Length: 464
Image (cartoon, rainbow, N blue to C red; front, side, top):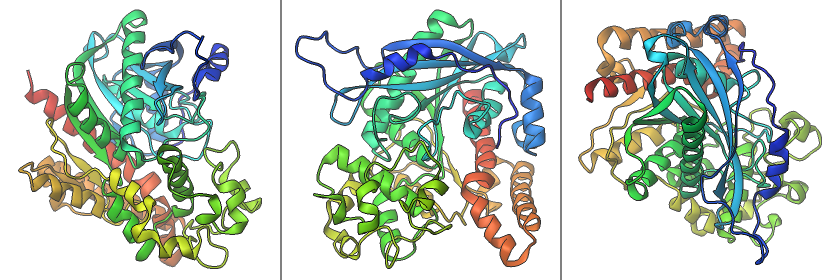
């Protein structure tokens, strides 16, 4: 959604100086780098009133899902130390959205939602900029305005980070960034906020963020049990089975957005593992090879990159191979035994057993992150005795655990939302194309966010 929540501009001049710290080693005579999660800067960057939030959700037609805001929201911004894939010090930032007001659910110790954002090519992406960041305003309305503290890191490579690439779909690395962002946020809140985090920790995220959320739960429960206890997690529409997803995209059906996702992923894995290619020409067609490795995150729009000939001229972003395609035929031919496929296997999130309850959500007709990622993750958990729900917005039966009335309302609302998008485009073939274009990025997120919040509330209500 486009935010209607007008906030004060971020006053972050000091951050520009700090950003030079990111992504590099220090000379031997320098002081040791700050610890992971060390807070470098924490400020209150703005605020949104409940009335402003309600105006935004009403304008976007999602207030039936969000509910009316119970709280104002203070927007805080933290800048912190983490580590890059080589273990070198790097800087990152996070939004910390805090409920404010006099209502009981807006005060005292509040549960924390650690939220992982979706894919973006925009280098300036900042979850704390609610005036311009659609995803940030969405989680503010669903969570902070309803009494949850939200900690939403901007991954390395975005906003004021010193890293020159982003660690896209690197499971272990993403978890490090999320853990360190939470640490910094808690330090800031302890010192500056009248509203404090409770011991209840909920994890969610959408699309890329669904993968990050699941990876974060896995790593937290494996490595950080003395520091954090996960209460529940709801990853949404994520590529959990990356290796099967990659096999399908490269051999059967290219997903919508592939010409954006592959450069992000190839660069991420090349920087992390160093063995994906010897030169960009090994994977990219000649007209794209010179710039593809450093293409994203970008300070210019995707449309400009296409106009400049740096991406295939394809509005569906599916032109991976053939004349004018992004990747070479030799890359495709060698994929089955490639180090790229091995990296996908490394970052596939199957074969682990959650300790805290999990639910998943998505839509079966998703053209961007195919829904088998969700059903296969569900089946994998079930194979080890963990029966977790996978809510499918295209199946009222899958929504039945939410209650008959809620299931019918959500299913009907989603179908109505699709029909509205189709009708606005004139119906027929054009309408179907419009629905496909809006499905992953616009239609599914508010419905899955409503399900995630309801699931979290049910888990919290069941616990002392």
